[in-house]
Image (cartoon, rainbow, N blue to C red; front, side):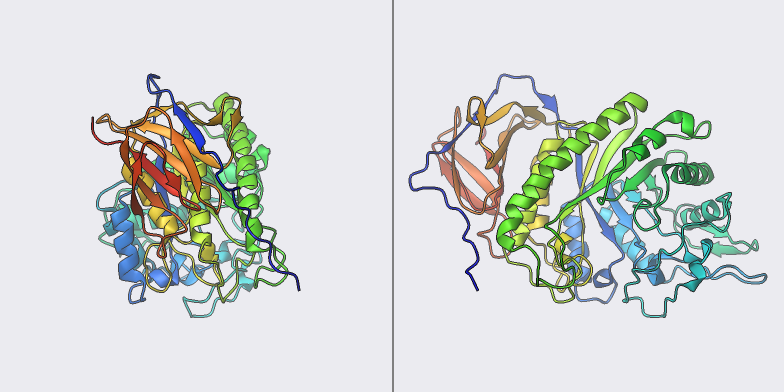
Length: 499
């Protein structure tokens, strides 16, 4: 057996990377909301060991437009009507779902949130009644989304289902299929309601069918809260079929009066998945760095292309990237064996993408996801699934949320020599509303990198989340002479002292 390849290190006495900022430029305002999403993961259930600390961390993140997503793999929680109504009774029961919603809304502390009750009951599809669920809410059901043909082709049954869920949380309750009132006592407000999640993935829903379903759901839900807006598509990372955008974003393909407030897509970088259940046969961790960032550049090109379609067809519709993350090859491994530096590397990928998207007219960037766990894509998690303690992905997100705010000014920033931008580091200067000068920095490499920032004070502070912190918690480093050294896989903010 050969030894694993070593990471490349810079040569001794490598010159510092120049970073140059045009501080006299008027700049452009920050318009991209940085946020996250939470789903009905068993480690977040009340009574679970991670519950209290995880929701405390969500509250402390203090993000706007956090997204709540009951996911299909956990139908005993996410689907409050598990069986079809009979001639005399219905199966409506929110007992398992309510605690998640209540804790999520409480952690938001009045900040705007997004609802995506995404899962359509299996019994609404032809052949869906063959799905066996059991009674253990902690068991994942990857075969739950079986069937592609709706038993009610008018889609009224699906629209009525989502109307009743929305009424439960917005209007205090609903009348079921037999006219019986179900009281909830909830009077929540959702800034947005997202219609389905990744309909292109398991269901393989066509753009035409999805558009009809979107229209039906929006038309049904609009009277509940005239201020609530809607998000469409929510397409998976597996492929971004251009036809979805060309069809859905064309107002001519929608019923009269249906709003196109926003649309969303997802993206996850990953190495080749040879074995999703274990490390054997998969690419070595030493290759992940180059793979992640090569894929990130490709995704940015996709974003530009999709944004151009939206501007042509529906220029007022906001584009959201509301699930962005990474994962290793063994995404379903029940015995997680992630290298310690993975979390900092993953943080650099989503922080880099967020920083680049600040220039691309993206209204929202959502870091996925608040809680994964072994067997359920653990590499996307922001907190430890056993303790709820934040990891480097969380800390990097919070670092940027705390320092770069809507309305701050972005200034032209160059790394490397003129005409030869240095690919190892991304830098972007920001001027806060109070005049504070900052530079957002991302070290894409697993080795330290020295910078030389021109026109910078002799003494400043670097706040860094990086691979050298055992817990991923941010560190505060003093910088002298405008020459910071970025630690391996650093997501950092260089802050000038007050004038």
